Image 1: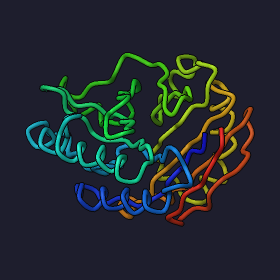
Image 2: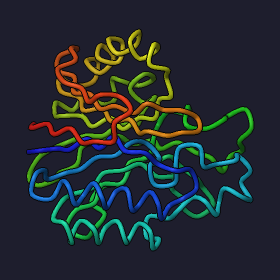
Image 3: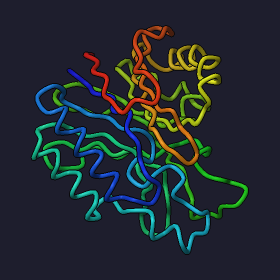
Image 4: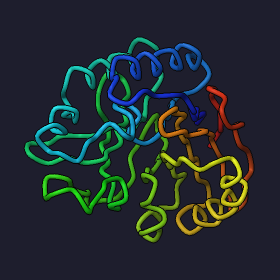
Length: 235
């Protein structure tokens, strides 16, 4: 299975722009990959929330909202599956979630189980974490997904024996990345033999993006920082 890791820029609180970024990448990915992956909270932007629920409930999106349906339709139009992070609203609860879409439908919806996506000193009970991990099937391939801090807090919960997709949002400086790349590779090994990590680019705060393929605790391949591009991995 050919998986594309799209390190693309998002704009906080601009869903239309971010969907357009996804669609531009899908056009380039058409015929080259079977699943195209974006970073954590890419749809709204990782820093879209204010931690005031009365405002944030309108920023979060239900899994059946029109922007999500549009994303699903894109998988039909381009014949490529799509994986991306978004801030999800279900009833009165908000989550950092990851959607997997293919064939015009939502085929998997994962909710981050670690709390580092939110400012937990300011949030109330409306901001929640998921409780379940597991595998999903896409194009006859078994895969798993974890979001950012999940692999630091609960790596043992992702030992499914299949490739793991790891969307993150990390705003390290380039110097910090040099110091931490090997740590991410070693942490990935605690969960999976093969881990595909994708980070988004953003301007405020500055995120340099990047995509990484870790195998047995080693960095096998990576996409250069600060370049909006796609890295293709076959698993």
